[in-house]
Length: 274
Image 1 (cartoon, rainbow, N blue to C red):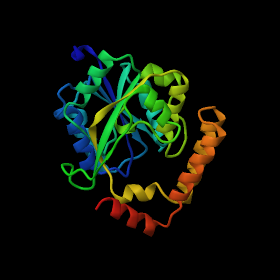
Image 2 (cartoon, rainbow, N blue to C red; image 1 turned 135 degrees about the vertical axis):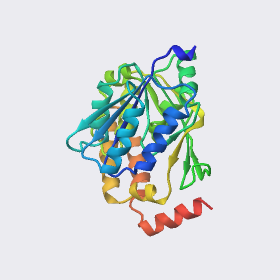
Image 3 (cartoon, rainbow, N blue to C red; image 1 turned 180 degrees about the horizontal axis):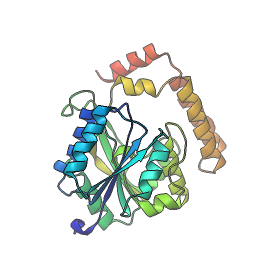
Image 4 (tube, helix red, strand yellow; image 1 turned 60 degrees about the vertical axis):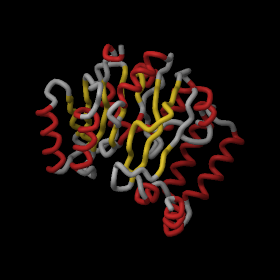
């Protein structure tokens, strides 16, 4: 039974997070889960607001023996913070969660069942995006199902939804873990895991509700983001994950979309949501 599979949950939080979002995320992975995790690892990535500290203290008291907190004196960024937290995960199966997202009540149950039935190393799912009301989905971020489809898709786009992944810690470590690659730490990791022979699967339904909206889309545009994406594509080329033709295709298509004026990005986003 899936109850026999031990599970760690890995989160990282920094000062810009809202306490009410963090509380809602924790409720979803503990209070509401049909199968509760054996351990929750929370990395405090640099100094936090007093409101966040108070929220964390509440959960520390509530989850005695379950919640392990790692405090970093300085903000090191998501990739490094997750690597540090991963070292403290007691179990090989680790579920990722962002501190502003919401897991469905059967998320862990469904993913653990897949690990029991299939020979895989990492399992993600679709996510349901919402603006303000978590019960009102504005879009789905869909990803391919099978290992073969995922490997093909990964040469063009990120094949997994990071906030919904559950993976084997041993396979992540074998691939070198998270590495610095601004905005692309997770995609970079999946690419390395594919090259190391890891086996993938995506559940074809949303197991996480993710906060979205124009603000998130805006953060993923602009020259800084575009240049970072080019550097990432160079990494994929140099390590043999994509060929020169795929590199040119990816850079050409993505660079143009990233440098569109923000006013135009907002108009396009609005049109897509209506």
